[in-house]
Image 1 (spheres, rainbow, N blue to C red):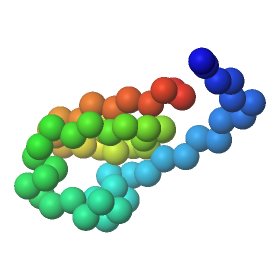
Image 2: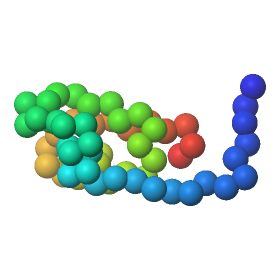
Image 3: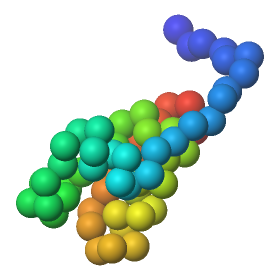
Image 4: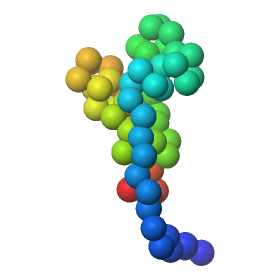
Length: 61
């Protein structure tokens, strides 16, 4: 059964916010990362620009 949203309020976090929030180490950043329900976060874009591997998915976007 699907659902319908009346409003979507976009918010997102930067790479540095993700690193602090999840206490990510430099070794963990080298792993393949799956970003689930990240919304419009810049985490994937920032990581990709630095050569890291991130796949993002979010059913709302």
